[in-house]
Image (cartoon, one colour):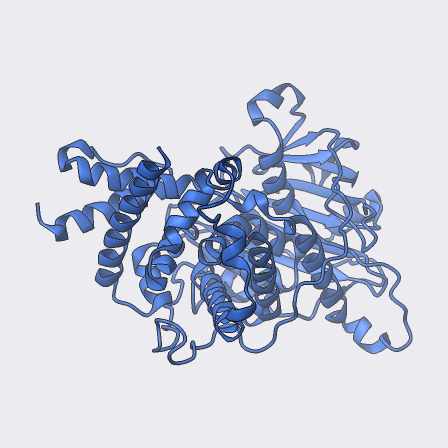
Length: 315
Length: 197
């Protein structure tokens, strides 16, 4: 059996292993090949990240940095920066982080089936008491500077020809709301009412539409000078999805919004929405489906009636 | 409404693609958190394959994510998949470390810390030479290029095509190097098992 064939077969089998699938029938390719695949399996299973002592603290530190940056992008903050004192840092770690964290930390969804209360859009909202994160310890990694992607110095690494240009990701497009409407019929609803003090964050990739294979979503993020956050998102979704959305031990109520059934989660505290002191900040969610789209309004420091008012004013 | 394609990625429908997450990560901690949670272990393992000490791995991993956050505002999904962009940063950080190590090699205690001497007590040797250590020790006996490609393949999960782009090699060359590196690794592990017995 020639080496070229074995190399191609190994690439195929290793990619299968890394995708969590079984390799091909390795026996037919001989003992040595089978041992190679076993070595690849050993490597694929090998996870040393549990020995890391910084995973949580680094995460919190970086999220707080984004929070600071976010406030600096607030147009009002830009004007008032010299006069205002920021009182609190807000970590806007939302549903994605919750899903990923809880998926790793909790029993399978099936085991919690009896606790399922609400299914809206792709999410199954599950109120449940959760252990809280430990506040971050002080951790200051070595500061670095310079462009992160540079050519290695000649003679100091094996690749002396510099970084290779990486091709584009053809699957993702970023459009304006008008382009999304014109090209895909995806109409972004914008709020005719926003509570006083909130301004649209003036940052790249805010208030745009992401278009990928089989999905579209838009997001508008607002903030205030004192660190309150508001985000309005709308997206396509798969009707069959039942993604667990663990909101902690809080009230979840069904209400009507825009004539639709909606779910309101009041002041969710899950141990990952925290200020710089590690104190939890409650965040409320309002979610509903409309015209085959999923809508979510997330906000800190806003009561239910204000969030409903924003929803009703989407046009 | 028409939507192109039928491959849905619905781990989170509001930001269904990691390129979307990366594009929004500078502004949304939630998006950055999702990327961090997904990639931390991959990046850590990549670095751990390439350096000899867990504390140094932590330090380099933190530098990588600091760099990612510092530069993520300039990341453009239209230009590169996020994973390839991230591991280009990771790879440069590891190379920076090796360069600095070369400059101060006389200070390094890494080898002493992680490699027991033949005179070490048996219990100590047994403790150190557990499965992970044996594997890491075997990987570190490979040439640097092979180490790098093994790490890019198995820690980061990149496809050969992406590794070729990150490492500046042809795709077929990557396949050959990985194949031969695995053979070397297999032999090293077998030798170690034999000597361990």
